[in-house]
Image 1 (cartoon, rainbow, N blue to C red):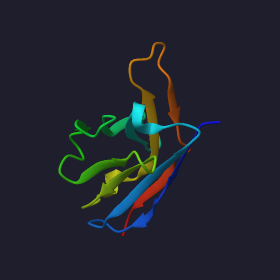
Image 2: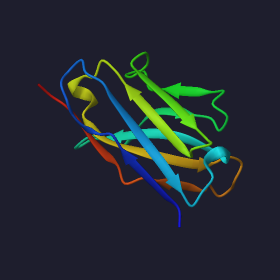
Image 3: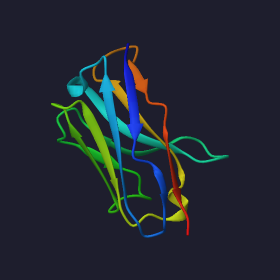
Image 4: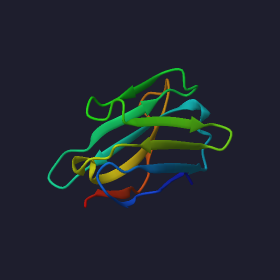
Length: 120
């Protein structure tokens, strides 16, 4: 059974930092592109950051560019999201997603999410 488990969320003041982690079991992440998404109340889920299987390519939403960094450790089957200079508008549930490259129909897995709240 494939599981993605996020951790590291919490309450932080504006300007603060958090590091989210996503650990996978039941699957080897080295063949998967990994992404972080977020969803806040009343809004659609949006892509925050993505990284290719070998970390040679990354992508960021314009709203987090320069503040967030996505990284992965295939040996440990993990992906992380380092979040700095956090703003109240970063408040959301953050989800980890794995998508298998080159497979049709797409094979993807989601974590259960971790809450990030940025507030003073």
